[in-house]
Length: 344
Image (cartoon, rainbow, N blue to C red; front, top):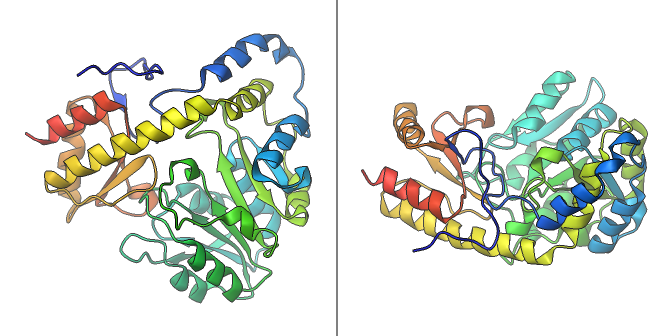
């Protein structure tokens, strides 16, 4: 069977196949690369501090006003700005136990207290989170699909959660992997923005668009929240080439469709293969799979086995689970190599 694809798979300088960072194995849109080359002369000038063109395109895509959009040097930079802007010393944030590491790391950097919500069968349980929220809760961070488990909560769950908590608590829905979703019950979070002004939706160009190395992400929210973030955001952090690449990527529907289709195909293949080999693997709505083990030693044996075969995966200690691995969905060749490796 040929492993040739419409788009070139990424060739790294080392011998390891990188399956640890949830990168797009098909690279970035060719239109993004062309846009960078065509605008390479712009590196001598400062970027548009307001990012008007990109914000307008994102607003049009989300069917909102440009004033409802903020752009940052990766969604992590927006998360950082929110933590330092909205949380005072006697206040706190709430995060799920096994979730994106940046929430906890940035809270610790800024000396912000955080409460950890237990998972429910590796799922973010909004009823558990709501019990941890009170009048001193300023931010709740919810990755959906959750990184690293790939699990989701549904539209009605999110709506009920927002209605239950204090309206002064800002609910941050981190949808970095939203394009990979195939479950129709996934929340239409943008549709909820009009009714709930304490909601912000974060999205990224790092995953489906393949621009992880350029660091660019964005948020969609009520203008009041956007204005406060903009007032505290460090200027000139989004470079010119990241902007032109992002603009070009938004228009490349062929590449996005190709990436979605092949991720789904390869995700189904790898999930079935791992299940058939007897592994505990969670169904995923993202571009990675979560393997959990009964002991840390079992996990380490599998991690080392994959490393020896040139396959780099991610141990989950930083995410809150020392007995698990996250495996990014690679291309056909990488996923076949995983199954072959673990079959012995």
